[in-house]
Amino acid sequence: MIEYELAGNDLGEVRFAISPLHELVLSLRTLRDPGRFPLQLPWLRATEPARTGLDLELLRALTNESLWTPDFLTPRPYSPLGRIEDELSTLAGTPAGVVRADLAEVHPGTLPSALQGRPARVLGRVLAALRDYWEACFEPHWARMRTVLEADVVYRGRVMAHAGLAAMFAGIDPHVRLDGTVLRIRLRSDLSYRASTAGRGLTLAPSLFSRRGAVPISPDEPPHLIYPARGLGTLWETETSTPPAALAGLIGRVRAQLLGLLETPTSSTELAVRLNVTPTAVNQHLRALRAAGLLISARHGRSVLYRRSDLGDHLLRGT
Image 1 (cartoon, rainbow, N blue to C red):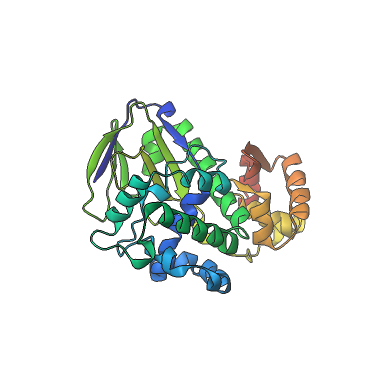
Image 2 (cartoon, helix red, strand yellow):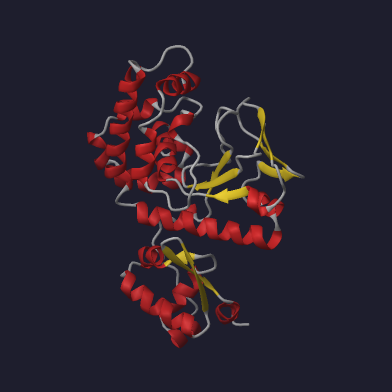
């Protein structure tokens, strides 16, 4: 059990962030044990040809049988606008002692051969392998991945603002709960510690490669919680559902499909992928639906996220 004692039970104690590096590193667990990540199988199949030229021995060595990863590879992010270039640049400055200690924490005893050697050289090989992995397997899909993560952040922020911290944490993961001012995260392992967020705050980062709440191995790391993002089940799907015939006849098939999809905040990029149409076409439909009062929109970072309005709900349900 991991416990974070919040310095104050208020909204200012918690911040959200999106980390491309987190996603890159956590996805390594799917390479080691793909059977535990069935929702990522479409992505694994799609990127299989691109992985043939990667240093897979080293990449797989960055996790262990418990699917832990070294803390230095998943530092606490600070912004929902994180860029992989910035995160890899920061990672390059990791002190040798931290690299050595964190690798030993994940691989007690003898390190895998791919991770043996002077820490500075090992870190250089790790950075090179991660950059190649990003370019081959993540860069082509990152826009789609980011839209799901951003939609999750918007949703959690709305719940937190309207219903409070406890309600927001209750919806993140059944293994996470807020008791008064103490956030408790129940893990599968025997890892246990208690730390205060005083002076450091608590960062929450949604992930497409986490099945349950995850925290740093060391209590000395800044408090942050990685949790499963909403919408993962539809990330790699193309929308094929048929909207109600009467509604499609009234506003058109594509616009009716859009209304059906927009129960939760979603960007035009993700909608275009799921409907297999161009972003330009989607934006035209979204503008028309918003002008009719059927959608509401809000800017989040570099994206505009859309969601059905109450009027859109009533029209979709025929009430």
